[in-house]
Amino acid sequence: KIKDPEVFNGDRSKTRSFLNQLFLLFTARPHDFSNDYTKVTTALSFMEGDNINYWKDPTIQRAEEEVQPGVPRGFDPWVVFKRNFPNTFAPVDEIDDSMVQLTTIQLQDYTSVDEFNARFIDLALKGNIRDPIAQLALYRQALPEYLLRKISMSYPAPITIADW
Image (tube, rainbow, N blue to C red; front, side):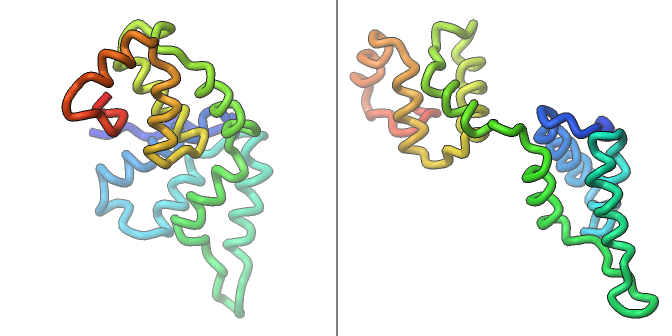
């Protein structure tokens, strides 16, 4: 059984986690969330608090507005909602902060390669670096010289982060 998402109170550092939790819920119960209306209303129902109500209440009021007598406008499709929501609640400098961290991250600062890789990929995604070549260039900068030499001598030569 999938658990319900935590109530989102407008904390910008939890925006991505909230959307991920909704994705898991919708994916685990596709018959319950088969249309945009149920997805958007469910997301809104898991939002509470002063920091979120300034956005949530007008969103609901706009959906209630009649486009013609007796016909409410309704909510935006889920894809539009999902795109607009993080635009409002993403951490203010998430991309810049992630980029700075990517230029200073070092493998030796982590207890395992898996932990390092997970953190690196998280920062790359938050930094909006989707190009594998750019990711690999930053990844190589984070590795110690002895490891770069060892890996560069392997055959076939690694071309992705997963290969490294």
